[in-house]
Length: 209
Image 1 (cartoon, rainbow, N blue to C red):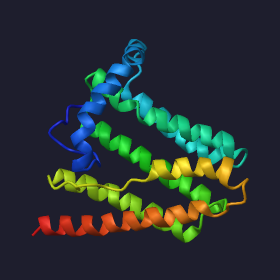
Image 2 (tube, rainbow, N blue to C red):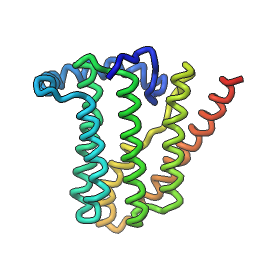
Image 3 (cartoon, helix red, strand yellow):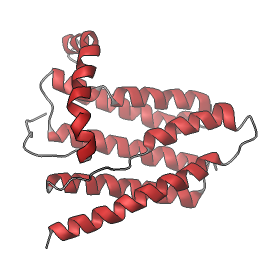
Image 4 (tube, rainbow, N blue to C red):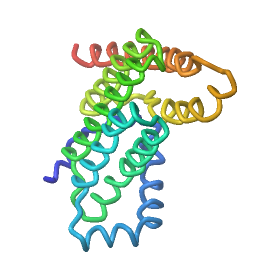
């Protein structure tokens, strides 16, 4: 990765960025032995990002055989998604290009997994479609606003909420007779996403005057 530190290609809000440095330092300390091992094996942040993407997309294939095993793929995707940043900083290869690639891979998994859930009739197709569109727009607007030095004060990216709730739905809620809860949660997330999408659009529009 080239050094593009003067560019901002992530989708963090101003509020998130305040505590991000301390959290990064904590993760680097806790993951120190693993980061050194990966460096000795010449495993880069790009390798971790690619493996995270593959595991996230494996969710889409494995779901049709076993939703439980598919959730394991999604869990490994999430864990690796939180590892590529520390690897890049440890190896001094962190860059805007890497951040952009990471965000793109995350969005691919968000989109592909939601399409599978819609086809499997786990979630309503309208709610799922709005979620995919509004999520992508919020991420894109967050990147544009950061590039314009007009970041969101806070931003909604509820993919982890959806992933956790899907696991709860599979193992606890559905067996107990609670059906359709993922769709209800999606509509709540969609409300927050659409709000941030609209405010993000007008903030960018104002900055272009």
